[in-house]
Length: 399
Ligand code: IPM
Ligand code: MG
Image 1 (cartoon, protein in one colour):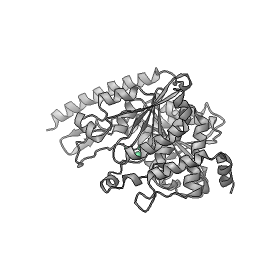
Image 2 (cartoon, protein in one colour; image 1 turned 120 degrees about the vertical axis):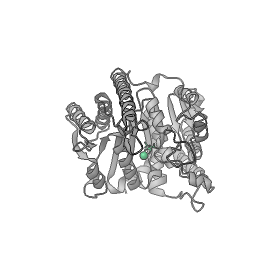
Image 3 (cartoon, protein in one colour; image 1 turned 90 degrees about the vertical axis):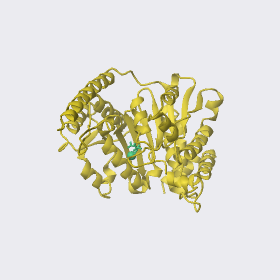
Image 4 (tube, helix red, strand yellow; image 1 turned 45 degrees about the vertical axis):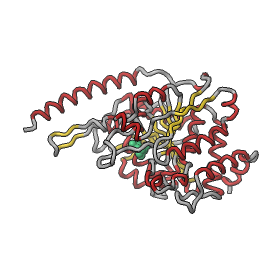
């Protein structure tokens, strides 16, 4: 009785396989990393997104423009507003990212992006794909880098989440047989796994990190996670100076909250969905998803964003201006670092630490009893102006 569905699904699967083989071949032949030092200007696209997105994006841009004032004046850096990445416009075009918006994004070198609403079943919008997922795929942003730091607990983790494969690659393209049998697909390719694992090991090596932890569920999900783990074993051989171990996602989730174990984790690399989940848990340990920044990096493009959503409720209740911009400001620091403005990134990270972890003079609660995002950004800028910023930061760290 399901004959037609089976035939359609088999044809669909065949198409998916061919597409995935093509994609894998493209990864094998992709070019080298872009060199930002050779660009003039470096074009930074800014897309506010939905909900609280435009509010926290505006504050982040102010902080970055302050830090990059000379570069902007000299024409080395240009900020460019990207319109149309709103849920209204995406729904109007029935596209996760409308073609003309994607064209504009592709004319920039990097993108600073506010959160974008991802509809789910039952929402007032049609169930279009997540703009995040679509941009990551369209720009091949294969590495989702998410640092989490809680100095007082000895936590200093950097997550390298694979960002274009796993359960996400074909997340919107599963099949239904009748309306009672649902099947989704999960994809891992050897070159896709290799490039993210290598990036994690390279990062560890360049930044004096000691260990890389690989997280899978290879005991159960044998093909895809099995391949990921095999590739990790192979890549690790090229980095004999870096210790590595592997954990299953379930026990890893537990160990992140085990005080006797968690400070031993360092660099962590993992497939897409596990990375999605584990980085929210990690961010919560740091103080909530509102405190974490996220870099989506590919060889040609990169996108920097908060790890949280659009908080539409805050907008509905008139509280958008009280949203905490810190997660995006952190993403901004990651952007500076990625573009090679290492000193500015360092300064901004120090100002963030001072504002957020040490002085705590400004508290954003998301409600009128807390500061506005603008006030928070102003404070970061004032902190940056302090000629003794580094000494001040060191004093706090050594306390
Ligand atoms: C994230 C978010 C996204 C994801 C959503 C919005 C699609 O949770 O960046 O972690 O699942 O990747
Ligand atoms: Mg997530």
